[in-house]
Length: 349
Image (cartoon, rainbow, N blue to C red; front, top):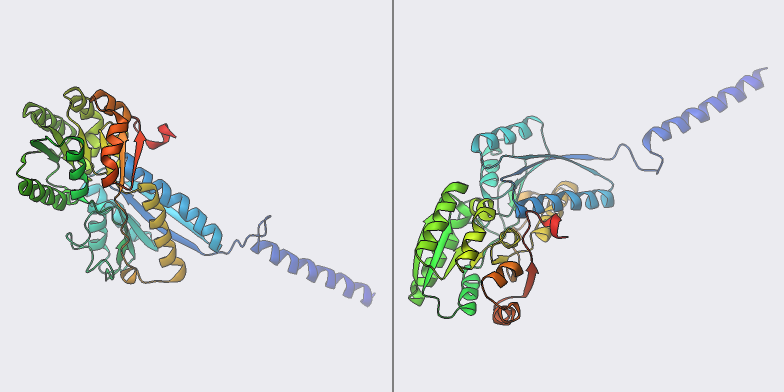
């Protein structure tokens, strides 16, 4: 009898061990007790470029998490350029004790930097055009404090060279931007210097809303400018679908600082690959959280601004031959790509 009881107890003990092991793994053998990192992501506005960045951050973090056997729990929100909403979103991230915050575009990054001064929560920014001029970082090599990220710095000289490659006889250039956008400040200053040195007249028009930008576009058309330049300005990006036909009908090419402008109807978008920028931002996030790196010690990542994206529909409407434009642009670009008008990149895939 004692032997029988001993056997039963042994069986029960073995089952108990098996049960404990089952609690730690799922049907695929994955560790259910794997580390989970909470990340708060705030996007500045709903536009094609910034949305593309967010999508690629999410997808790449899934890849990095699977590789490392960890989970990245993402809390995403969009403040739609509202400073009060932005502050509420960031405060909510802080109250949830997220492990890291991601600020997409300059205004969000700056707000996160201020909000995390006491807590020291790591901040990774994405698509900040000039992190040095805005005071976000002490240097690109060693940002300092608790912040780093990826920059979509625009080579203004390169894009203005394209204007004159397409039309060497251009005499008057329109500058269209939102004076309140930090991302536009340095490129517009650089553009004025460039045009002054060439002795080219320029006309400045600004807007802070879609309606104001539309009126500004009308004013540039009335001024009979030969081309219009806009840097990576989120306000103008939001308004592009409302103004691109005006410029095309007036035979005025719109040269801009991101491929999303061209997607939404501008003649040309010149700048970084935002899908790749999103992936590299995710790699940076994973490196900080998984490997325990201090954000302030991780160098800011910049990218080659050598891709010119031409909207072939607008190219034709302006009376340009794409093959000739491609040949004219080639010496000033790493590559020239084609795109057609749509509201989002998903629609052209």
